[in-house]
Every structure is written in structure tokens, then in C-alpha cells.
Image 1 (cartoon, rainbow, N blue to C red):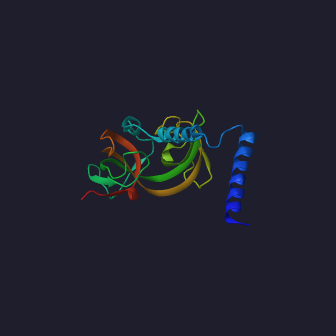
Image 2: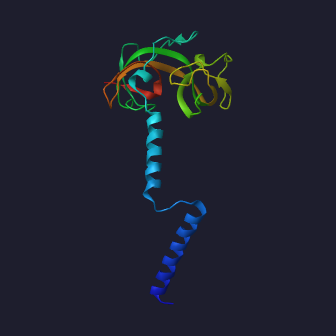
Image 3: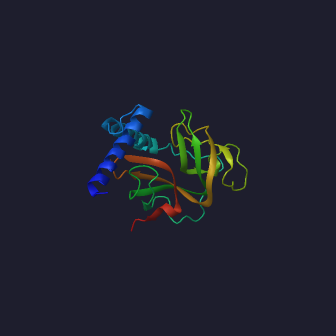
Length: 197
């Protein structure tokens, strides 16, 4: 069989597949509207993950029972570089340490009241859980969150993804993307800070 015949058969096969798809789904696989819809969905999903400086800020109040760090690497009032991208504008920002505490930090997955699924949120500390046991909780443990770092978080049922005993910091910084001021951001871990010198 000649090359022309193979090419013709290939074209006919592709057309047949597209026609079958259109008949079965009622959609045109070549329509640009499908792609535009997917792009907009991705944009909306990205927008849902963005947070303003106001949302990243907190009152500075700390949970009951949280102990100040005895010997933090980064002392209160010192500057450090954030190497974490929990939210836009954090990574690389120069931060001033406004609090240092020894505790257990968790990454958690939970669903907000409006049904948004949040996975591996960093960070929630032991003292922000409802009636936690004294011991470090294992991954897979189900808990109720008493933290309002994000809208829809407070009171949500969550599952612990990871746990680590470390020093956590509350920090003030200007976002690297918009230059907005963030105050008393909770939390960054010692591993997510580097000396500013």
C-alpha cells in the first residue's frame, strides 16, 4: 500500500474519531470555547488560592497554653528571610519576628463550609485544635480546627497530614508581589526562615 493511501486512511480514522466523539458527547472537540472554559476554571481556582495582606494578617492574639520559645534561633524583633510560599508574596520576603513559640505544627486537610477542599494547609499548631490530647497527634487523626487563618477554617473538621515538634514564628512582612503590609502572620516554622544578613 502506498504512502498516500496510508495518509488518507489515517485522516479518515481521525475524522471518524472526532465525529464519534461529537455524536456521543454532543460537543465539538475542536471548539475553542471548551479550551477557554478550562482556562477560566483554572484562573478561578488560582484566584481562590490568593489571599490579600489583610487575610494573611492576624490580631496577634495567641492560643491559650501556647509557650514562648525558650531558645529560638530567630529572636523577637530580628529580621529573617521567608522561604515559604503558603500564600502569594511570601517567598523571599524580609520578615520581622513578632513571636516565637515551641509547639507541634500540623499540616491539615479539611473542607470549608461552602464545600471548598483544602489539602495540606500549612500550618495549624497543637493549641489551635479543639480539645487536643496532650501527645503529638498522628497523621490520619481527625480533629476540629479552632483557627481562623483562612475563611471557612474555624470549626472545620480536618484530618492531620503531618506533625512535627518545632519552633513556630509569628512574623510581620511586606508582600513581594504587591508591597502590602502583613502583620502577625501565623505561622512559619524555623526551617522556613533564613538569616537576613
